[in-house]
Length: 236
Image 1 (tube, rainbow, N blue to C red):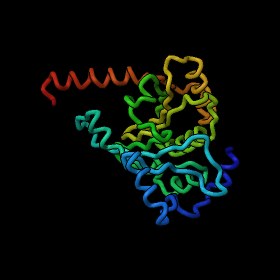
Image 2 (tube, one colour; image 1 turned 45 degrees about the vertical axis):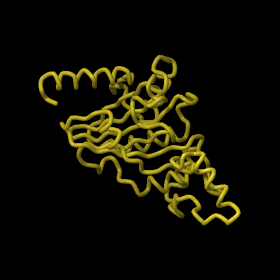
Image 3 (cartoon, rainbow, N blue to C red; image 1 turned 180 degrees about the vertical axis):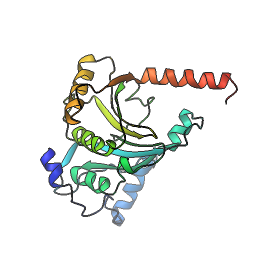
Image 4 (cartoon, rainbow, N blue to C red; image 1 turned 90 degrees about the vertical axis):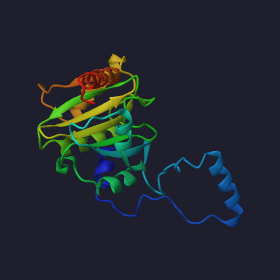
């Protein structure tokens, strides 16, 4: 799978829009009825193009940026996450990725998220709420390479944990950068251990690298406790 990715790295032909040619008259009524049935809110599912190499799952890139120190709520966080686009094949991935800024070139308090299509990069999402994430803190200058290695391993199914992987995040901060990979079931210790060991291997981490696993339940509790203290002290 890695060879396939490497071979396609510079393939930037075509675009990632679906075929938007107007439907024939005989199909218009059918399409309109189908859209009504789907409440006209769902995007058309992204599919591999002819001759492309399909991924096992469809994925979506997201981006978020916020002002440090500004009080945040779940609602404001969700509104701040911007969807970049979805892809279903190796080729479609490279069309997005080749035009994206690398994490090491981002400034301020910024995040890239790459999650399976249909899963929002939020603790409360149905697919995430019983899970957790492995966290690795990086010194400046390492984020771009580690992020690329991480997402290629994820897309190439190198973690070998079935449907457990939800997505990955790279967080650019002022003093350090952070990468994490999220999984569905925090209580499955065998799975979380396998993810940890694979992460160590694909990122070629030194043996003394500190890796922290944090459940989303703990993250939510810590967030609520912190904001409760802020509000109690009049900092709302």
